Amino acid sequence: MNREDLIANIHSWQERVGNASAKWGGAEICGVSKTIDPETINMAWDGGIRTLGENRVQELLGKIDRLNPAFDIHLIGQLQTNKVKYIIDKVAMIQSLDREPLALEISRRAVAAGTEMPVLVQVNIAREPQKAGIDEDLLLPFVRRCAELPGLKVRGLMAIMPIADDPEAVRPWFRQMRGWFERLRDAGIPGVEMRTLSMGMSDDCLVAAEEGATMVRLGRALFGARPAKI
Ligand SMILES: *Cc1c(COP(=O)(O)O)cnc(C)c1O
Image (tube, rainbow, N blue to C red):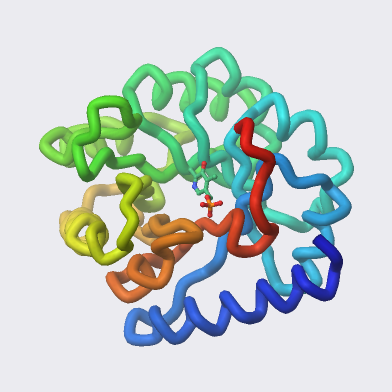
């Protein structure tokens, strides 16, 4: 995609997401840059994108040196425990915390690196068997457990919705996520801050924004279609 089209796309989505989320105080667009080349990604900075979402450690490591270092990079894809060490000092947030062994490893590596890692707890809100994420019945105890771990900072929730032809079909799940976000915020768990509710992608981000997302993750809407194989 050329620079002009990319920046126009970004501005157009910023306006639409901004309008849809106005009553909540706005939502940030995370530019999902998987499969996109660093030169194109860096152009997105000029459109106003400040946060990138990458979902594969290997791909991220291969291109990170060519990315504008001012971007905040968020890991948004399923993360193998043995890969945490490669990214602990490279990403600003891990959005895909979905199980206790991963929490323990992030904590261990963050402490060893003398740093703290902000994380979002991924919730499998629609209870899809094949999908990663904590079941909502276990969410509160899981967040409490994470709150005890040094070096790990729970900063919100993330969800990936079921694929649906009509984004209205997933509106109830977005609403349920917002409910959990507020409940956990009001629970006042020491060390836990509910700042970011990351939900909504290219096809359903406006519904997500209307239902209280503070961050939407847009890949195709900004950068165009990806190669089929990913
Ligand atoms: C790829 C991806 C996105 C963006 O998807 P689009 O449909 O291209 O907007 C968002 N979140 C996660 C976790 C992803 O893997």
